[in-house]
Image (cartoon, rainbow, N blue to C red; front, side):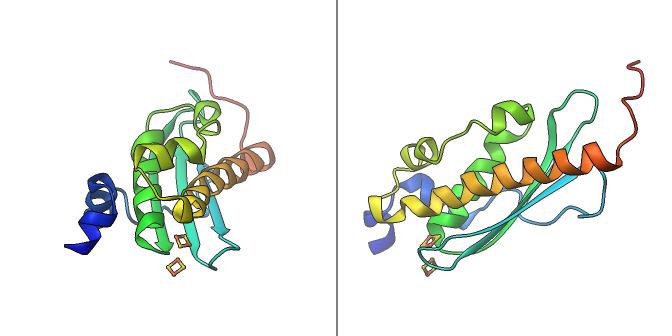
Length: 141
Ligand code: FES
Ligand code: FES
């Protein structure tokens, strides 16, 4: 069909079977929420991470987007990519890597930017919460 001819099969796959769709409880102290919008089109994406406070690693991740197919594919791919990563590693992921991996056309570059902005914003939220509400690290077992 037209869609498969115009878009890379990886985009179609993530679009048809998006990974990690959903929400995490926003008020949990170890959950960071990123909510961002794309000025180019007005689409919105929410991406949430749960971070292990002792290791600094992302142990769970969920997203929701009111966006186009490429935004869904970009965020789905992003959630798969960051699970198990440290928040430092995750904050370095560039939208250009996502766009390349999914072979997004130039007009859809901003859709992958939404995924990069969303993970950064989720990490920022987690860090803010952690410094304001978390007690000191419990001793490691
Ligand atoms: Fe229409 Fe993104 S501009 S869904
Ligand atoms: Fe705007 Fe994809 S996020 S068109």
